Length: 229
Ligand SMILES: [Zn+2]
Image 1 (tube, rainbow, N blue to C red):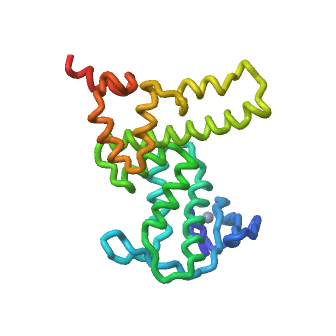
Image 2: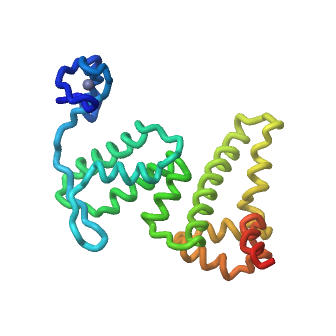
Image 3: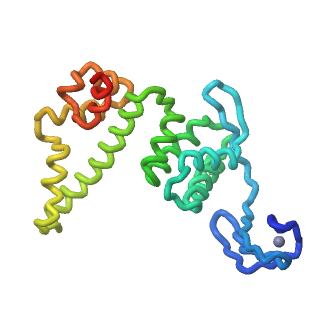
């Protein structure tokens, strides 16, 4: 092992941590005094990935991380989280004990991981991975994500309001109820209905046929109207 900064092999180990996925060592170069971390991981068999065109490709951990990094560029996501996600994917692939596996297994795990990490990174990855090639399909994906996030808030608000949220100043129930009220049948439920359609392309097409200036939220339509003037 050589110092990545000066190439000296005069290294000291400052700290060793035994983790589930391997051994992490904090090292210091005795020559230039730079510090860095090394990992020792067991080299276990990782299945070959079957691409959607049928071609086979060896699992490449660095390539996977580059993909995640690209989606996370300039987002406040700790490097450790990206490392963790890559580890998670690799460990899972190895745990399958198979020689080949669809590359979608990797893509699905990454997109799910990003969804929990950062909405913007998720959308960036989704554009590439789901092949969203026009603004409507991107918007449909964003709407779907917002609806999921909102549904999460509503569930939380509903379950807690009956038991342990007596605070009237927060008033989460009425706030979320105004935004998306599942039981109301006003024009507002047009949007969630199309968002919940499983195939987002179908949802997007539906939104086109709806008269855009009348039915949908005004803020998102405004830029399309503006250039006409
Ligand atoms: Zn050095």
